[in-house]
Image: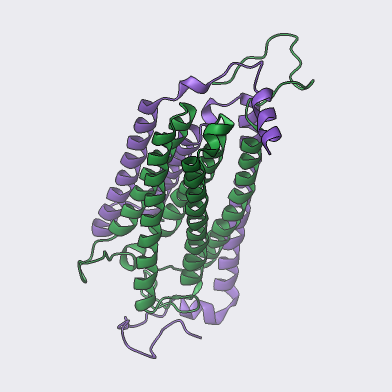
Length: 224
Length: 147
């Protein structure tokens, strides 16, 4: 874990990196910090509206479909698949970072490619889910679902759902773009010439953050 | 740009390098933990849906604890923060404590708003007691919730 500071060593007197991370990586951490507060504001707004409502639609009723099996009810199965895809692509991303540290260009390319594939698979799933909900009559300003206690639901449910999963999906989309750029740069040998794959690590931080946010979105919309 | 990258390399000199500590086994262990937690969450969500066996409040507490556990593993292992210098960890962890206030203040506010509405807003109160018929979603022009 943390290094112990030798007695008498001045960490902030210049000439060394007190956090032992590269500048860009540190700034990526602080960017993610601010992004976490953006998502946090969205999710807490959703939470406070839910607390102010008497009742809320049942996620097991709303999210119970799966592609290609017709009207069969499988609560939460599809969203679990999406979660699995995203966790899996996080793993391949870590592998890319590891391969970068080992200066293995071929392996970095392989793992980055798999990560991009995972991201695209997730986006495809989300596109299907949105299309399906839209076909059921759900959209911003339209809510066809009843509350769990049988009373009339408001449009808060769909508004928050589409806004927050949309904002997250947009993050996944930008992550896929960033990862594709990283793959192209790896393929061109840019990082090999530079001597390090720190850019892969920064892209990796962003990608894991997207996974992290999904963990919270998953809990807030599908479980609670 | 290249100059900047060179300086990035330079600044890390003088400190122990951690380049060779990448641990594939730890990553897979984290993956299995995350998967197991997610499957467990799913399992109890479905059991609850089918049987309503335990109180939902209790279940929500379990879900939130598991979510935080997953978040911890993603941040510590995948994002590697658990292996960074303590000061760096603290510059991330201390601002994140704001979420504690943020969450308590706003959910508290939400539930206070709910109480006020139930007490003083007749319309909201009646709406919360009136059952509606389940409508077929395919029917055109009958979109409940459209105002």
